[in-house]
Length: 192
Image 1 (cartoon, helix red, strand yellow):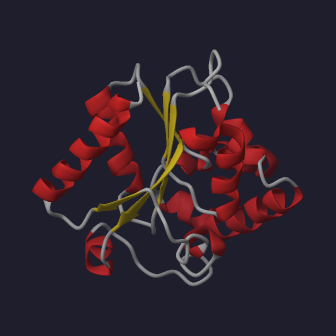
Image 2 (image 1 turned 120 degrees about the vertical axis):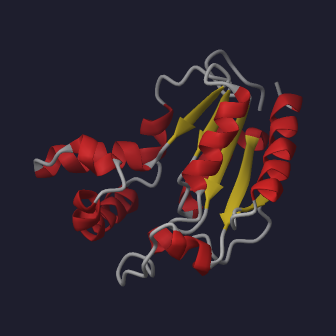
């Protein structure tokens, strides 16, 4: 599929467990390529905005890593699943509206249906990036297993998926992470 005006040249779909560093890696990549080249998109953004609107909550506070967000996480997951069952592409369509940069970094891909939507919409322009970190590293970043969250589809939906285009190890070795980021940067630049 050839890019059209306003269409991306490359879409990287980042996935991984909570506190694996998906956002950190996506932001690090954007900082190396520039905000004029890369847009970091979060599928959770439109979800949280709509959820806040329907439930009378503070949207901005749902965006951060606060206890406020955690208090609503389980219900947001349930609500989001209901929306996705009715329309699997609902949040994917919302997040790409009005994006002008040629490279899209979707930092919170969580379900097979998310990957399917982007592959159907953008074909070979779509690449998957799995960010992995051992539980010890995730715990050091504040992760604690939460029943109903860490065993839900929103955290486990891609665990058995094979064939990620990229796997980024984010276990605390800054040198190794930098090598992997440089490989991704070179790949992205080859597509521009």
